[in-house]
Image 1 (tube, rainbow, N blue to C red):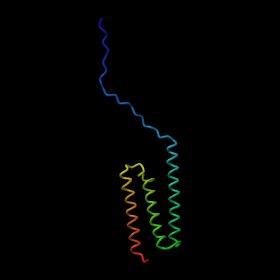
Image 2 (cartoon, rainbow, N blue to C red):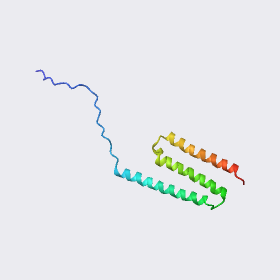
Image 3 (tube, rainbow, N blue to C red):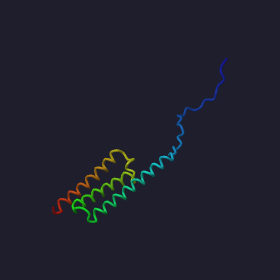
Length: 116
């Protein structure tokens, strides 16, 4: 006895619906906590730069210290507030290399030009 015919369904590739993955509340808290911590570090670095620039310590060493602190702040802002920490590794390395190179050039220029 023949089997009854069943309606055929068209052969379409099934793509599972991917609902947007909600971000866990802990992730938001962690990101906020990290941003606040980086902000405090930036404020402390600003205070250190002000202290060094206000005549504390040897002038040349203080100036070099202020420059180095400034470029550490640039790196922190780039990594944490411009989201370079989530960027591809090559871009992060390029940015870090730029920070180091420009800082080194400025420090070298200052030390070469300032009297002993």
